[in-house]
Length: 73
Image 1: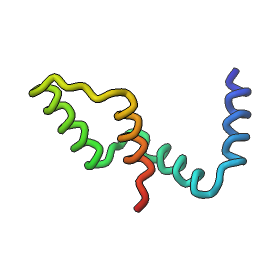
Image 2: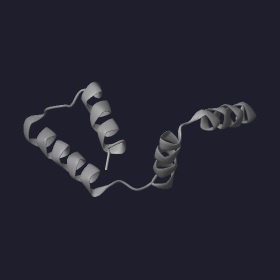
Image 3: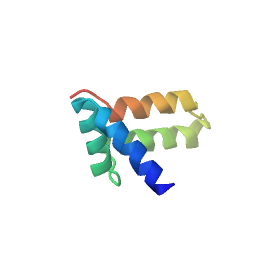
């Protein structure tokens, strides 16, 4: 299975645009680090949850994460 996963990843990478390749590279380089903006957003969401019990939907979370990860500089 490991070989097939490697092969599939190599094929995907070979077909990435330069922009997409850069995004993946940055994501992998920063795998264990979160931006201050992302940490602040998580803190705010947690505080809101503790005060109001509000929960963000999966769709809202997906959009927030996508917007933070792929934000145009």
